[in-house]
Length: 282
Image (tube, one colour):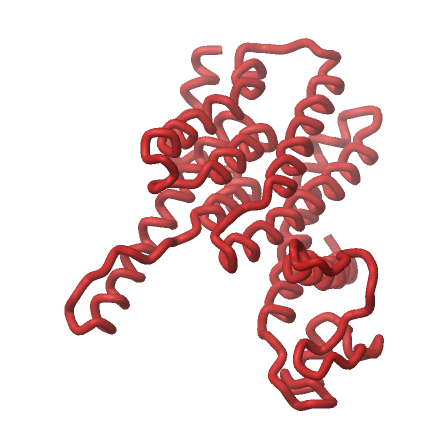
């Protein structure tokens, strides 16, 4: 893929990242997500168009409001940059799979659709990450939208296969239930103390989007990343509290699930060899 296309895709991602910031900061605050110009949170001055250019406006203004000189949250350029990279990752993955899509009569349309689809999915999931980190909750509207998108992808998959299914295809259909059931059980047994029900709904969507093998690998990777993060957090907590460990800090699990999903989506790594096992059976 030419660098010029990568740059275009990155810019598109930063533009959508700017909207992701708006959604994550305005949702459930009484402010309209689609209406109203952006303003400085400190002096309430309406921002000019050149003050809202992704990443660059933050750099040119040196991270401060040009009017009141209050600091601008680093979240703005960070989210824009991250989503730009995510869009590039999605585009590169679809480009690498072109040899497969080109065998289909409508392969180009399918490839473009999947790029748009996963761009929407991971933009939505980035909103979930930000909101869950800030508020320790995943709003139902985000969870159910993600689930609906996953079911849409399943429907498209079977349409392209003329609704002829194999054993592994049936497992992919069951993947949302197989993956989310253990987390829902943990939520039920612990009465929400060990894990939130929002995480179970999130895993349902991951299963619908990735299928059984990749979905299981995404959840396993999420637990590994979460465990490593917790160890470092405990070590930092231990040092800051003068050799005393406190476990009361609530750590949102959704960011680990979404990171695990994205990494498996990009690499298609089979951590436990489940795909090889199923292929030998079916």
